[in-house]
Length: 298
Image (cartoon, rainbow, N blue to C red; front, side):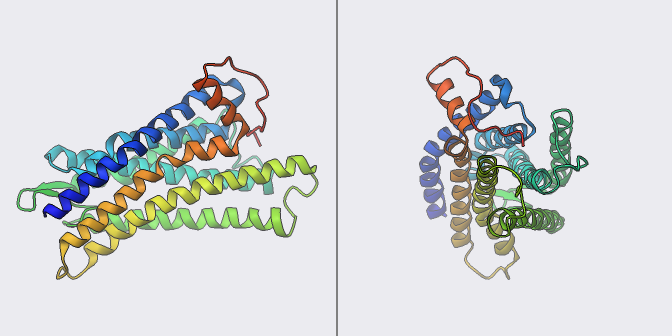
């Protein structure tokens, strides 16, 4: 048990720089979009939603390392809520890009400034409804001196149903994302059937935007997958294996996700001229300028 606590403390203190960088970076993303009128676009509003969920997760994630109070068992569900919000938002981004580039004249599933806020509200409400049952099954175990329930090493009654629901939702989201981006990559880079009639500069901008969102998606799933796999597979064992080893494994998986929370602001800064200029403006206290470069309206 001492080895588990030592590892948890080591990884927690190692994660502090990532938590600070992730917090500051995501706050800057929210501020840049809020303060720059030209960046009030559906795409950027969705990125702000991801940044907001990352901020909440960063503030609450240390509770995963130190589950020492009973109320923490209920509170960590908010972290899982933020993960669900990000996964839904990333899926919506993929669908929006798919329809924007492949079906630009069909406005049924296109997000606009007048309906994107409703879409974001639906994302948060759906995430709350999916994660809400977990609050009833997560509880403190006096005998084990830790939280038991969904996404822990010890499953109680009803935990598996919650986890199966989350896994099914995640699988559907991943399937949609792979189909949308797979189709776009094939059309943009191989068959040249996407944006074939646009000029090369506009086509290059659209390629860059798609790759940016793919990097965001890749970073999210690379951060989530170790945690998802460890908490799904390990509690499903026969119970004869050494729990301390798996406790250390899940702690490392949690650390990997913490690190992934600080990636998005860097991706935006390096891939988007708008965000790059926004970061410079906020950090160097410059006055806002118009026409900051690559537009993200289409």
